[in-house]
Length: 139
Image (cartoon, rainbow, N blue to C red; front, side, top):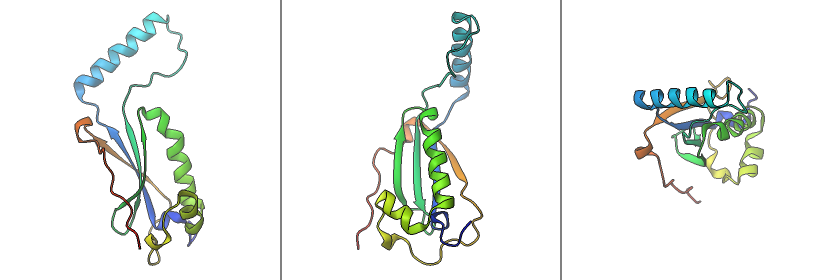
């Protein structure tokens, strides 16, 4: 990773809805029912409705600076990959400009231990899903 890559200052987290054992069984039967109804032919992958909240956070204190909410997991996958690629390849100033992140949030030399941005997956029960996000501090 480049010394000025945004991934040195910002990390990436995906908060997804936890799937309980009973829900896994229910999803299995739904998939089986769908396979029977379509005679084994599938018009697409079955996408259970599990929310996914994408969070870009500041590595120094884990403060969330960006968040994106999706109702389904499949809807978020492309966006997650794009953000990961941007964090690994974009210069930190350009990343901040693209997402209108105040530059005063970028302090120090970043985390020099980071080789590439890893997506941190966090399973969250639906009742503990964040509905309100903190606002960015101003100068």
